[in-house]
Image (cartoon, rainbow, N blue to C red):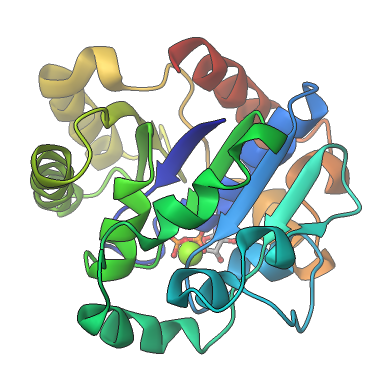
Length: 250
Ligand code: ADP
Ligand code: MG
């Protein structure tokens, strides 16, 4: 199993949207894919049509249930989810007192890694212990970001955290790619921020930016990834392209 972590401490940058839609695309491509919701908001969980989960990612990081107990098969091809719910918010605090506090998620997922080709972890919007656990479990990191002025500062913060986790807990962690989300090529600012990112991270940038597309924002309210809600929408096609590129990169 290859584990890819979708992380960015900023909220609303498209982490969950990208994690859900890329996980669905990997499933459609024939890969057994496990989406791990690691944000107490539970948006990835509801985004694949799962409501009121009983056993969640909280139970597995705290260590009171094995990961296999938390896995739910979704209605979508080759797509499984470990759901999240609000109690996970307390884990950030509770984990602080536990042994191996940054390796809890990794240890839990190791037990089921033979059953899946990919795990996709959706992180909360912070760089706390939950995100550190996710990074410690990862083979690769994808950083979704918008082309805004402050995005560049945010990018250097997350890169610092990735480097620290790599050094302290997970030497095999690599930056898989930076994914531009909600792109609007008609905005001069977006174009110039993108140029700036290219200067520093050219080889890390996914070739396809995800454009702003209303169909993408509608899909979660139906509990569906974009590929099932509107397969031929621009967003659906772009996320499938990114998933194909991800498989080449990892
Ligand atoms: P995060 O997980 O980083 O907080 P989300 O994935 O929840 O961000 O996205 C934030 C909001 O933006 C959501 O309402 C989502 O539906 C919307 N959104 C994400 N990507 C797009 C896009 N390409 N086009 C239009 N809306 C988008
Ligand atoms: Mg989210």
